[in-house]
Length: 137
Length: 423
Image (cartoon, rainbow over all chains, first blue to last red):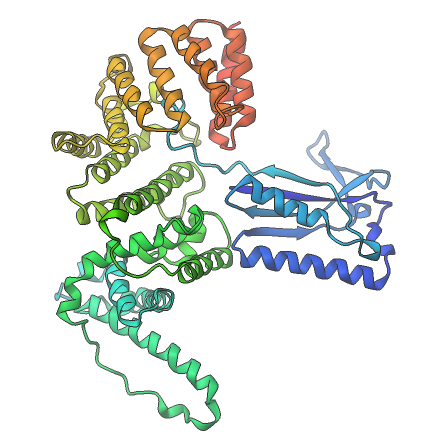
């Protein structure tokens, strides 16, 4: 089953907080993420992953009256911002929780776990249950 | 097979032949080298080589011998390159052997080939593997599909699928599963695991049939092909016959079960003239002969239910009392609460929605089913049957929120919207 795993970075002030960290803390965090991605790949569970630019570059886009794009933003006041996401393909919900918890505990300043909020959403790609009621099949 | 006529040179023919031969050749190579993982890698390379070379130059006169020779050579190359790494400075590159003529495996080994395919299935579907690993490995080692094809069927990157397959082989290695036929005592359990994996593959195809399927392997057809193979190896097994029948009788409705935009069309609204008559008659014949020889396992019973649906000319002709009776028997055999839910539907169709709803309520406390959206979906249908649209809408919407299948969600939301427009 596939899940989207979204890592919400704490309080953006136009930039990610990580930019203010010491070089050692910064490097430890990046190394952790590389290690995590490698583990996911080796387990055959990685479908995709991307990091996103800071909120300062975010735009909200709507179609205007003539169909042309109307942009809004950036939104520096937002409390949390999506920093990156993974699409994972795992055997159980429990495994997805486990992976999300691992990311959540990525090291922050001084090596303290950040315990970030990681949002986990099932991707709608499930096959029907083999023995599901025939009324809906 | 010795003719090099035009039909044997077309790419489809080569592809089918390759996949037919893959498990047979793999069996011999694995037996020969004693390492399933290495043999599987070598065969995969041989298959990829064959796919390009046969397309360009035509199918060789002895395709099985060709694959065997190339796989064995790749195996030797591998061993050689490993030992070469260790003593590479001393050796000259020209040490490579002269090209060998292609040789067929000895006849005695050819005789073992059918058994080998069965042993391979037991290995790939071993309970030491997770379902997703078993599926991937079965499709590659027994189905003869490439990693790229399997990856695209499951919409994951090729590297991810490659990793999954190599981990599966690693698990087999570390669990010490031997490449041999299981004992009679183990047979039933191991065969059960094989049938389960084949059914999961079939079901994956069911899910993907409404998605972007261009250039994707048809997993349902592949599952049917592999189950036919299994049936040929175990002709007296009623459950294998039942599984094959169940697949055929379900897949027969394929053309009718989705609309032009992939939207779900439920059984009672399908255009039955689109059902595949040939598959239906093959499936029903399998069911009858398996029953006649005394079998009555879960797959066979489910196939029998599918046959009843398939043989009803119109939805109102459905023999619900018989379906109810069959689900009643199944319920005694199976721990699966989904069977009990199906039974409740059949009871409703025979004795009225209230009787069905009462049975559904009993399932509310079931550990595995509690909070499952299917409970809501069935309730919604049953409330709709008795004209309680308000409750039907509530349960349709709750069910739509719970499903992880897009066509199903859309269908449930549409049912809610229709009920809402009526009331």
